[in-house]
Length: 114
Length: 110
Image (cartoon, rainbow over all chains, first blue to last red; front, side, top):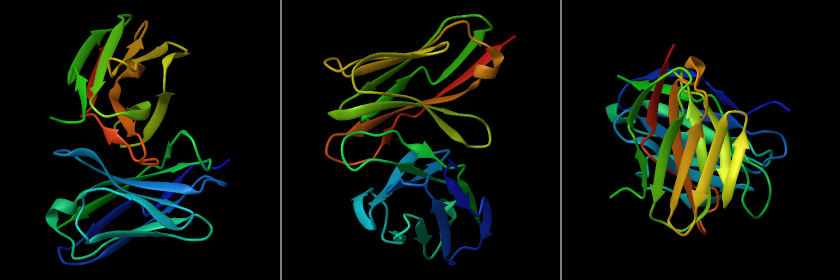
């Protein structure tokens, strides 16, 4: 099976712009979670989507949003970019409908805001 | 206080040494994950634990649910084990949300 893929891998944006990142989960996985990693804050949970519905949300401002499509692919959007949004954005997919399942991480998108 | 605390922050070992990384958490969990991150960012899941002990090659992970503590052990360490090791707790009733420790930077010298 192909792993989790994320596009683009690298991105440079200017303050005030918006950005959309994409994540394709492992085939058959219905849960996609998004995480932000920065040197100062480490890894933090952004949100999780399951079957096109947001199931959990972390403590991030409303500028961060996401969605999931019927094929389980997910996008996250950051509007009005700030310098502090520069980070590695990781998504992870998980299979199963209940219980506890392994999470498989994508390679990440490195976003630089100038 | 962070919900997940990891120690040590940095660890330097000689090749062949036995290594232990500790993780304590304060929330009720459905599972505890140990992750490995190499330079460049990619994260690999090493273990997912909800009780007891798991072993994979030279890696061993244990968890004590009552004490809310987990350990990752590396036997016969090798320079290729150099990476950041992160423990992550999956809080009860929060789906697949993970709460992360700050990570342990491990360097194994030959």
